[in-house]
Structure formats: structure tokens, C-alpha cells
Amino acid sequence: MDTQEMAALGARLKQAREQLALSQKEVAARMGFPSHQTIIAIERGERAVKALELSKFARLYARTVESLLLGEETTSRPAVAWRDRGNDADARLVEQRFLTYCEEYAGLEMLAEGKPTNFDLACAVKINDYDDAVRLGESLGRQLELGSHPAREMATVIEEHGVKVFVHDAGDAGSAAATRGGFGAGIMINERNAPWRVNYDIAHELFHLLTWEQLPCDAEPAPNGERALCDKFANAFAQALLLPANSVRSEFEGHIRDHKLSYIDCVNMARDFGVSTAALLYRLENLRLLPRGSAKAAVGSPELKDVDRTVRKTDTRELPVGVPSRRFVAVAFKCLQAGRLSRSRFAELVNVGLHEVNAFLAERGYDVDREYAGEISTA
Image 1 (cartoon, rainbow, N blue to C red):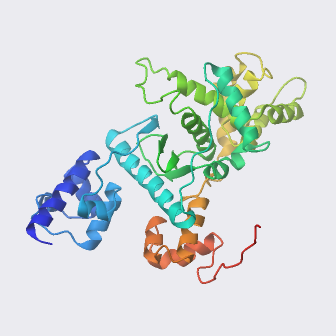
Image 2 (image 1 turned 135 degrees about the vertical axis):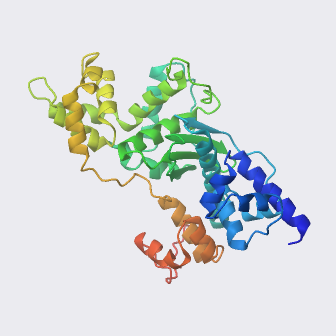
Image 3 (image 1 turned 180 degrees about the vertical axis):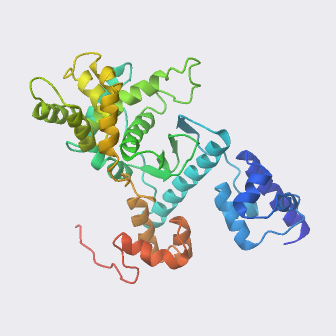
């Protein structure tokens, strides 16, 4: 690489860093350099970048190696709408990684099937109030055939409809985010959240995807801390989707003793449905199975909080969607088997070392040395 090429690469690396609001010291630490002076020299074109370093830069900045070398990534990327967006620098970095995951996922679908999976779920009605949001949640649950306990299959099912679910340690960047683009649709979930919170976040973000143009969710929060109306609608939708009325009524009636519902039964019902105890209580109240105001009173009860904390500390930390998702791995494995994806690229996409590929696949039921050639005629 000559001096001119080094300068051009340095300028692109500087631009990528600044777009993520990362300091030279932060990048040096993440890259493992002894001092930020190394970053200064690279960005000035005074120091060459080794091949392995360039790969690390690409992963850090959520870019492709080709775009850093050739400067081809000039088009703007889709907008990302956050829920509880936190630290700006962290959020920008997570956004880039989220969008890159969606783009890579769509690229794998192109290699495997010839086209990315379109987001084919729609909201055919105008959402004017809470009742509209509830009806949308209930109807979508029936449309997707999610059954009596939707949280158990929701993440898997919506991926079949073009939603790329990205579970990532987002730190202080925010709890969840959504986006729509040429790759279909995407939902980012912070893996630090509890499993029942993750289920609710997926449902909440799904509402934003369904109403992406009808109810833009990128407005600034109200100064008094009040949630935007579309977020309140999203909560109503999530409750209705995850807690089907008939199933909730049936379980509720089975737990009533002398016209009372015990705290332990509340917690265990919430666990069965894969939601928080608070979400269950508000759904019970909205279904008029509990008196108005009783959900808020129960949620604030120290005794219920203690029961909830004690019982749920034994719950598994296994999230409802894998990292990466089961479908992402299946599509990538299909490309690997067909020779359309190199082993090293597969390892990079699933974020494991090259020597770990066989074990990674074996844990998910795949034998890398077996040829999966069996077929069924459809005509």
C-alpha cells in the first residue's frame, strides 16, 4: 500500500470512528494498541494497517473490510428507532452493528434462497386508541398461530416473516431498538435484560415495525418523562399479543380461591406466559378480572416484590432467541454446505474462532462433515 492509499484509508477510518463518536483513546483500548498515538498515526496515513488490524477495525466500526479499503459505503443506512436510548456513543456503535447484522443476514438469504425474506406482516387498520392496539395484538397472535402461550414461539415465528432478531450486549446504549430497510425488518434486544423482559421488548418493537409509517416512534421524550403515545399503544399491543384473553381467563379462574388470587400464583402465571408479573397484573385488570387500581397497588407491594424476586431468581437465563438466532445459523450453514460461504467467513458471521466452528455447529445439531443431500419432491 503506497503513501496515498494509506492516507485515504486513514481518512476513512477516522470518518468511521467519528461517526460513532468514539475517541482515539477508546479505539486504541478496544484495538489493543498501547497508546492512542498509534490511532493518530494510522488516521494521518503515517502508519500502515496490517490485515488482521483492518479486520478488527471493520468489526469495531461495523463496516466491511471492502468499504474501508475502497470507500464504497456512501449511501445512508436505515434509521434506527430506540426504546430507552442511553449513552450516545454506545448507541451509535450498537446501531451500526445492528444494521450490519441485518444486512449480513439478508446477504445470507440471498446466497441460500436467491432473495432476502421480506417483512410481510402489516397493520391494515388505523391505530387511534388503546383498543385498536389491543385488537391488533390479539389478531396478530391468531394470524401467526402462536397458541395459548405466545412467548414460547414468537421470536422464531416472526423471523420467518422477515424480522431479523439481533440479541446483543448493548450495555448502556438502550433496552431495545427497531429498524426497517431493504433487508426487511429488524429488532435489537439487549441481552442483559431478563428473559421475560426480552419477550416483552420483542413484542413492543414488533408493534413499532407494524406501524412504522403510521406512528413514527423517533420523537423526543416528553420533558416530564411521560412516554410517547405510540409507546403506550405498543405496551397495550404487547400485553394483548403475549397474554391471549381466553388463555389468561382460563388460568386465572383455575387459581382463584375464595375470590382471591395469591401472590405466588400471580408470579407463577407470569412465568408460564413468559412475561413480568406487572404485565400480567395489568392485563388481568384490563380484562376486568381484577378491580380497577388493584394492579398498581399489587405491583407496589413489598411482599409481592419479595415473592417475585425470590421465585424468579431460579429462572434460567436462557433467552427466547439464540445469539445468533437459530434461523440465522440455519441459513448460514446451508450456504456453507453449498460452498457459497467459506468456513472462515462462517466463523466470522457467528463470531467464533475458526477452530470452534465444528463444536459450534454440533451444539446446534449440525454435523459439518455430513452431506445433507436428501430432498422431497413437491410436484
